[in-house]
Length: 382
Image (cartoon, rainbow, N blue to C red; front, side, top):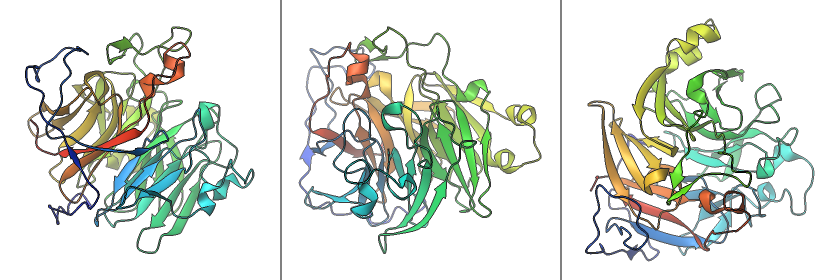
């Protein structure tokens, strides 16, 4: 889908709130100041969700899919399609969204804790379910990757992860499909690793599990919306490999631990080579750029890497061609920009999960605001 930016002016039939630029506030650079927030004129806001959304994916026809993980509250749906009138449709159907409600068994056939969604180059929707409600451990038999055909709204394939691929303490976070269609790459933010799935023969391997590139950075304390990110005990959460992206040619896989400053990459040829030892594989990891805390990442057709910059309430772009960073949009109505996708209309779509406002990071006080929002903004940096 990233190589096809047709329908640049794709009609979005629900009403968009176009936000005005607030005069008198410095926009770039800026320090956190709640009394004088930045309001970006390029930011379009959708306020549809009563549940905490993380993943977002946009098909080539402009259909929008969103995932709602089962964290501290029970979501209405685990995965839904955002309809043109703003309502939600359980996706791919109601049955897949029944676990935890009127279904307590068969976690392999229902969404347990759907974390992320992505559309591949052939317009198939992939749904990643780490099956760890409220991060309390993987439900046996529940961790899986699901492939859905939006043309028929039918599940095409379910790939289950056993204890070796998804140990109990793991949290499979995000996924990218190789443009060749033969491999899937998944980050594990719970324990730290890159999970590589051979889609041809079904072989699954956990790689770089002991490598610093997939691990949280010791001593690093993210500061989001002017507050240090700490739990009830004052500890910084150790969130490991999280954001992930692959270039248009499928040559490089980029990834980033969330509570870490650095962006890394590795050639996919090395990840596919089963002859390499872990030590040899580690020798091919490249430290790319210092970015600060990052959650979602996505690349466009020109191999520009867009990512959510948590400490700046912003989206930024890294351009490997000249090793530069730019801010795309910055706005203090963005609390925790989570997953991101590049639409066929040439816009960026991203969710705001407000993770930093959850009770566990605010001494038990819930600072999240409802409805949860997701956003659309221009690709062009301001």
